[in-house]
Each structure stands twice: as C-alpha cells, then as structure tokens.
Image (cartoon, rainbow, N blue to C red):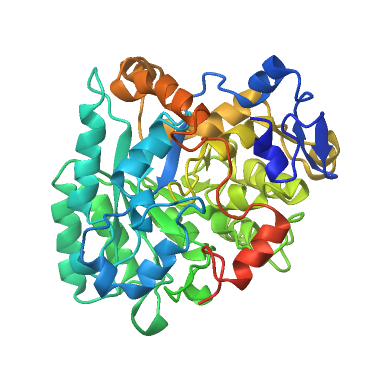
Length: 439
C-alpha cells in the first residue's frame, strides 16, 4: 500500500502530509500500518461508481470501428500482458477490477458512441448479459449493476433512434440514457436543446419514464473527432430548466486536461468553470436537478492537489454537495481502488475554505460523493443493498482475490496503472496514449 500515492508523487504512507497551497493528502508514516489502513482503507462506505466501461472483444467492432479500437487500445492497463490486450478490458476483467480488486459496491455500466450494433463495442444486449452475470453472483435480490444506453440521434433516422430508445426501455433493465453530443457525422455534433435533434431525445426519454440522462462533456477523446463547439455543458443545463422532473448528469464535470483549474473565472469559463457558468446563466440553484461526476478529472488531478482542491471545491460549493457523483471511467486503466484510496486521504485546506468558500472534505461529504448521492439519484436504499450484497459470491471472494494479489497471481488493486505522474503524462501525450488528445 505504501507504493500507492508515492507512485503519483503524493503522500500515502510516505511520512505525513504532502500539500499544495489548497489541497493535501494526510497520511501517517509508512511504518504505522494501522494508521495507513485507517487513512486509505475501507471506512464502510457505500461506493457507487456512476461511470464504468468494458468491451466485448469478440464482436465485429474491432474491424468495423477502427477509430474506436484505437481509443480503447490506448486505455488498456499498462501492465496488460495478454496476447489480446482487449481481454484486459472485457467482461471478466470488469467484474474482477470493479468488484474484487476495489471497494466498489455498485456501478453504472456505460458504452462508447456507435452508429449501430455492428460497430458497438458493448451493445445493450451484451451489457444486459453482464448485468445478468453480476446478478447471478448476488443474493437477496440486489444487483451490483445499473445499465445505461447511448443514443446517437444525429446519425441516420431520428424516428428509428427514438424507436430504439423505446425498445431498450422495454427491457426494464435501463436506468439512464447517455449522449455524446459532440460526436456526429462529418464532425458535426448537436445540442440537447436543438428542437430538431436534441429535444426529441429528452422528451422521449421523459415520456418513457427514464428520468436520468447523462451527457459526456468537456473531455476530448482521440480519434472520435469530438468537437469543442458541442462539448460545452450549456445545453444540458438549458434543458434541465425545461424538464424539471428529470435529472441530468454532466459526465467529467465538463473538465478538460488542457486547462489549469483555479478559482472560478466567469470571464473565461473553461473546464469546470464552463459548468458553473452555465448554472449561473440559467439560474440553477445548488442541489437542483443538474449533477456531475468526477470521472477522469479526479484521476488526472491526483498529482496536482491545488488543482484538485479548486475543482472539487468549486463543484461542491456551486453544484451542491448532494449533486457531486463518484465516477472513475474504470476499467480503463484497471481497478479504481487507487482513486478511491486517494480520495479518502484528500483534504481541501482551511485556507482555501476561507478564501473561496469551499466546503471541508469531511467524512460525511466524502460518503455522499462516493455513493450516497448516486443512491439518491437512482432510488437505491444503500443500507438494504449493502446488507443484501454482504454475503454474495463477489463479496466473499474479495479476501481471496487480495491474497492472490499479494502472492503475485493477480495485479495489486492499489498500484496505479497508466500515466499518473507529470512526466508519465507528458510522455503519454507525446505517444498518443489515453483520452487526452484533441481529434
């Protein structure tokens, strides 16, 4: 465990506090094993990851969607030694990394954008089979997974896309729809408040009774040609005012890796500030029907505690501490345990709390972000669900999996995978590794 945050130039079990001017990681010296476990280990949280992925390597998308294939291969864990690297991000790897190699309790399984089943790395029917496999390992009727479905209304026939939404919702397994508004034919995206393309999707989701809509915003993806003009969160916030009975999740909190997060700057709103600016523009109060998750943003900002403090502080104070969600983008890069442990140890300094009005990252606030907020969003009883899952096969297998990790038979869940230090990130960017390059 001592290698965890030391690897990312932080402070886990490396002798106390490592801090920027506004953020810090508080841990005891490495020889204080019980203290390290208390700082980084499970505190009994209900951890609900709202942003997870895996692929089906055997499907045609490997040949029919070369850009998607390049994207996925760039996000395979760096220590993957499989002959077919896609098996390191397949269904089996997903169930292991999420539920055996991390403290995650529940997750939302998502997909990448595609135009049809032939170029989809995770068609909804296959995601449903993952749901069934996870459910078969549980007792008491609870499931560790919720499913969402990606809608691409700007490809092909809009009526056909809406009919597809109807068919997916009829499975009764659907918990949310998801959109990539910046992705489209010829690099042309769309806005959710566009009456010809976006609004029909929102209206149809509402009519189907699927009241959660998630939108990829901010984070550029290589090869998929996501255009900045449609990657701004303004349209999500705008439709939230028209559909007040629905809930809208801004994935990645509109964060972008090309911008240094600092105090809110309404004169030049970039990254997280673009979300705050949109909330201000449309008069959305804190803890309303606009939510955001920290997927990709938190992982990237781990080595930069000042930026991390600003990003989290701005979101918690403006969006509301009841509306920030835990997301990791796993199993891209392997188990999410590194991110979970780092979040447990992170603090926003008293100086930043006083200067900028950021809230303290108390255990109660962290518990909300790690899972209680998502449980409220999807109507999950966290206490009942935790009890129902306590004796399931995955839960009982966790100690065995961790012994095998110590013995080297399985990868250690707390060893970061992929680029995490500044030098590694720069090398990664130069060699087109990961989802940070512009199209």
